Length: 229
Length: 229
Image 1 (tube, chains in turn yellow, blue):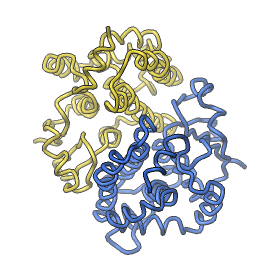
Image 2 (cartoon, one colour):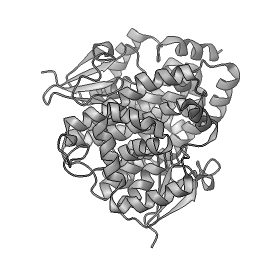
Image 3 (tube, chains in turn green, orange):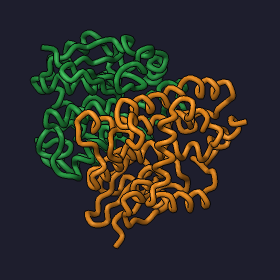
Image 4 (cartoon, one colour):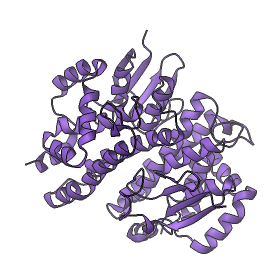
């Protein structure tokens, strides 16, 4: 029986975060196009939300918007939250960091198109700093040991989010893999390990066959691609 | 003994969220200027974070960045989280919505200055929709009853966040109170009630005496003020 409906656009960008989690836990879910809710019905649903993704829980008939809230909900339900206060806080903080990186990589969701000067400055300064933040967070916690995860010895929602962010980014823009290798080698390895998990490997293979290298779509993706040469 | 250090800039904007919460619970905390950490030390602290606010817990010596993560941490510690799954999820979702409104009101943190056309469009369409989202969320839950709170019959972190958002906005830009009254009358009343709580009234009086109507500072505040006439 279908447990969840997930509403998002037909690109990975922010939707791949909950989708990767639903795949990881083997949930029975259906993907729906966001236009079924957004924008016309977004004020009409119970617990209205501004924008996709929306998760609809079939059993409780409850909608939830905001990617970090969706991930934290699923993580609580399926025991993917760290147990200690510090790492529990860091799980949410990591998801919020991911959300900020999505915003910055797309130059505030395409508010302006990238130009070479701004992109190079962002790539050198800000993007590398984000990568270092993830790397140091991992080294302060689980990535100290070879088979550890970002926040400890057990997989958590933070690993799924980190992979949805950097795994997707590096797949869509292979030119950026060297940045991740330089600034966050343990995080790169973590993403590769997570993408190879039995529950995720086949899903990602199919999704990437379907999407190719599509990232966020639209004009801002074109602008991003022009920056890669 | 000092329990927390809170690092932020000398404006309310995003710092007032954790500060209002610390006042609500009567915490013993010290406010520090964000420049003590940002940007030079932001990668050097344990659990590095990109930007202010940072909360430092004196007893555990742990830093935490990201406003929504700080609020959720404090809410958990001081029992300001709703108990039911749905409203617990909505508490985080509400804080994330607040964070998005901060971003949108400042035109993506000042990426571009406002002009009349864009501002009027934002005010009419998007800002009013945000207000309606808060209103409907409240009416779907605690604001159905006269003395209720956003998510139920007990105060939660969502009320503090909602007040930090709209109470501050309407104090800094009184011209926007009519918007809130039109689109979210129950939320306006809630903010007024929260601001009158004994733990908060005197703090807000002093803070507003000190700051006047300062909101976020910088060029984008000037641009916002020009929109009000």
